[in-house]
Image (cartoon, rainbow, N blue to C red; front, side, top):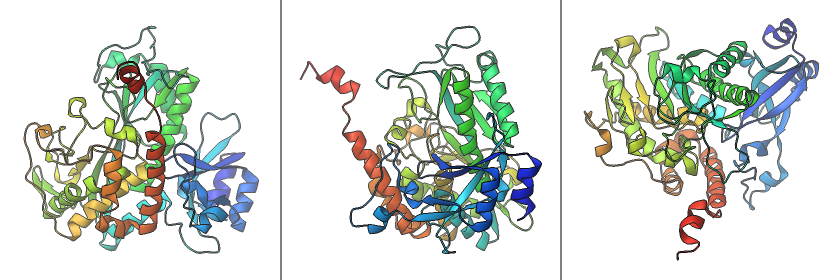
Amino acid sequence: MSRSIKDWIAENRISEVECLVPDMNGVIRGKVWPANKFIDSVKNDSLRMPSSVFSVTVTGEYADEEKDSKSYSDPDVSLHPDPETLCVAPGFKTPTAFVFADAHYKGGGGPFEIAPRHVLKKVIALYEEKGWQPVIAPELEFYLTQQNHDPDLPLVPPPGRTGRAETAPQPYGLEAINEYEDLIEEIYEYAEAASLHLDTMIHEAGTAQLEINFNHGDPVHLCDQVIIFKRIVRQVALKNGVYATFMAKPMENQPGSAMHIHISMVEKESGKNLFGAGPKNLKPLFRHFVGGLQKLLPEVAPLFAPNVNSFRRMRPSFSAPINLQWGYDNRSCGLRVPITDAQNTRVETRVPGADANPYLAAAAALVCGYIGMRDDIEPAPMVEGNAYLHDRTLPRNLDDALDRMLKCEPVIELLGERFVHAFHLIKADELRAYEGVISSWERDHLLLKV
């Protein structure tokens, strides 16, 4: 066995290995093995997991079809660990490692086509055929809240070092972020141990809302890092007696939490940026990429806004886009173009929520941009000023979004019909479960009045 697994485990004195398999919602599924057994299982290709993990809804049910006999027999998939993702798992008493694993059909049958990590790799392969290499940098927002054991009660900010909770917006507030200094330092310590490539953390506009920026790099690698970062933040928050949530809209009178994704593209051989020729000098390839985003992203919204709650975030008064207008350095646009030099020319898609599966949010943007470049789709004119004054082009709710996605043939063709069908089954099941819930709003306003 190569050094990348066996020797790495020995050098880092690892006792246990957690095999991470992100499901359709970006929830980590997997198994934990003693290190020696894990190494033997990799040798023997005997790492297995039921294929049904890719059919689990966020409520813990299985989105199966009665006529699909395979879903009920639930055959195993073979897990192929990615050696490049091996990292120390911080916070465990027993020396533990994380490794991401790709699901394959048993017996060398190739990748399991509905696995989100594979879906993103499939999109990147389209770029590689052209000699292109997409580069992304996510910006991930999240809230710290007091622990809440009753889901009927609203979330509230936690007290900081002063013993007081925030009551007003503090965007970029240094004193505000210092309220959580101990927790933030521990997050950075855990992230360094796990070899995450973080840039800066800031205080966002919401009360106890923070944002972390990741350094730019390979899309699959960055999505892996987002998954691990979320896990680390939740662990550290609990250790410090608070919750950390990546819900898109956890509090009704506060801004939502986004996962903005900066996207650029370089020539694979030379590393030269293919989008820009200088400040405000955009190449046709970039214009077509944006054209593809504008035309197709609204049609595949569930891939970046996957939950009922996701659409509560998309409200103009809370700094979230409602359309795919584009403009220079304009944060009211769904597509912001930072003013920079040629090598750093990029577009920031501001539509994904922090609740999105990062692999699918990135895949959605990259496949729509790819179709735009392939088909020479021209974008609408850039806007100046308030993009919220333009018509809404993003769906208003998950029901509408799912209907539109099933009709988006160009994207379905490239992502795969089986993946889109499986994803839709899960989201339709979750929507039905939500529609069966009676909300506190209904009890408050209808119980004694109608």
